[in-house]
Length: 323
Ligand code: 0X9
Ligand code: CA
Ligand code: CA
Ligand code: ZN
Image 1: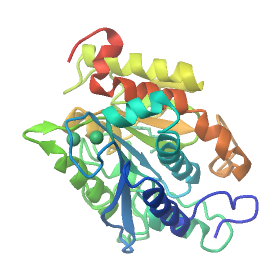
Image 2: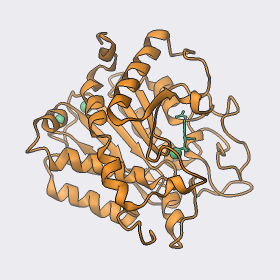
Image 3: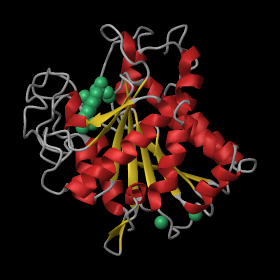
Image 4: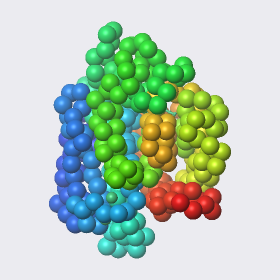
């Protein structure tokens, strides 16, 4: 389990308990379901937050995903914080109620539960990143190198099973990635993708990143200058609210097979990657901030998340365009 100094973090069982408690507390605002199983057969839980949550209403849909990377435990807390904030404050806060009533918010707090549980299983952190799926030489696929747009194209991932950025033998070979893909593909209703925007939460470096990651070019196939300007403008606006640094994903380093490139290229979902606290650290220590920072470093993103939800009906509206 989590070592002392970290017991404020949720392990998998505690996360599931929290999700079930949210359903009991707010049965008219949330539904809970599993989108399928991890490699080790854990359920991949997803909560929907909206008014009339058991009805598929004609409301812009927004997706938040957390914990693709096992050791990035602060991101589980970020997704749980979003869930708590948009349910517990519904009755008392008009802006929260407005967002919940006019949107359908999907939250997947742990995309990689096997890796997260492995990271804490001995009581000392293992600095584990990938999932726990065996490969030909070692264990683990990097979920954020396993998505299907320009998979393995560009030196932004590894073909070696022992690598921290092993891309897997084929795109979507990681069951966790395939299940999130299946869910997103299933949100195409009547030929229209219902999910308009997405944030994938990571740690660390305090960054807001947008596509593409596979190329240094600002524009490329499927991403024109007008769209790139929307990504930049929204990214910078959110960064002005949380103090992160906004940049194109490839400005950090080239990645291929990352989630945001696929969300955009395959579905035109306005997909961002947020790298949370801390801004910098030595070695892997940045993945393990004490639980005392959880409250401040999750609520820090409240106004950026609210802005993101506000504009999810038409993200290009941030540049004065219509949809
Ligand atoms: O390498 C990653 O997957 C992310 N950094 S982390 O330390 N959380 O592993 C950065 C990904 C940046 N690229 C894209 N978002 N495309
Ligand atoms: Ca609704
Ligand atoms: Ca809907
Ligand atoms: Zn990460």
